[in-house]
Length: 404
Ligand code: C5P
Image 1 (cartoon, helix red, strand yellow):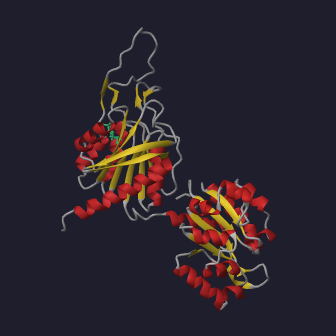
Image 2 (cartoon, rainbow, N blue to C red):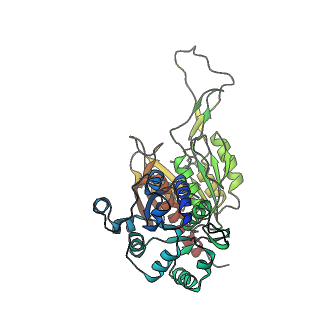
């Protein structure tokens, strides 16, 4: 799971734990999030806006009405911009003001104006934490859907020991990440082929294509975030493997075919994103071919159709195909949907600088009786949208099954 492209508004309030907000900003950024920081006046007594500006890469906001900032991104826009509000440290005073619904500074106003989830990491002296007033405020806030991380118990800056220490930045980052996990594929097993294949011509040369494996890896990550158990069968790709994914490396189509048939049993969903070579040299040379002849003819033979074979051999498996097309996108995609007996197909235009080895893409998705367009966006975002759509369609397919 990651925070790739998530927009996080980090609220820093007045408490000694504010020094840990610097590390938190760094961890959130490292996990891929775009972080904008809002500080309360009291927070500035503990950490300088300059530190958090340098780490987040954006000017830190403080005042509710700051003409310079309001011109760029007004406070309401900022509230809408956020995918998540993290308040760390959340002081007793801030929690009390949020519980009352006050809007007398920028952070409290944003918390009222946003529809994004709010995650608070309380930090205060143990007496203040256990005080009935604070506990009542916490109850009110959690009833309203505010999520809490911590506080931890232990030694405190004031010299006392007990509950009230702010959760560690790594723990807050993990809690933020978990909030994005949709759970749409919780407990489901997913198999994905990805990347290109290589078909040997001789021991040093091969036939291949421009597939980078980016879309397949983005899907693997999105499926992990959605709670699935993910296995990938990867052709040669330089893309890093997302954490928690089981990876099987192959080179040729024949190897990918064998590995996929072996892994398909027991899976719930199969997504074929691999750009498989339809043909391979019929008799690869045993030794490097010498440049003696003026012309050289290679005889190619058909490769097995992995997706077609899997969908025929495992009729209960929910099969998703990809169709990279240079023309007549919808027509070709619908034809493949039927011919390969698929449950869903994602078609994208390729050629002319589109599709392969890029960071963004668009998809036209078809299923028997339906269609949805996913407009141009990053492959990361596109993968999340496609995984949500696959989860929806998969759920629907289960509901249509006859009762035992
Ligand atoms: O028929 P076409 O190759 O255009 O279909 C593309 C879809 O079929 C993709 O999902 C691709 O991964 C899969 N495929 C396959 N084995 C092949 C050829 C394509 O799994 N030999």
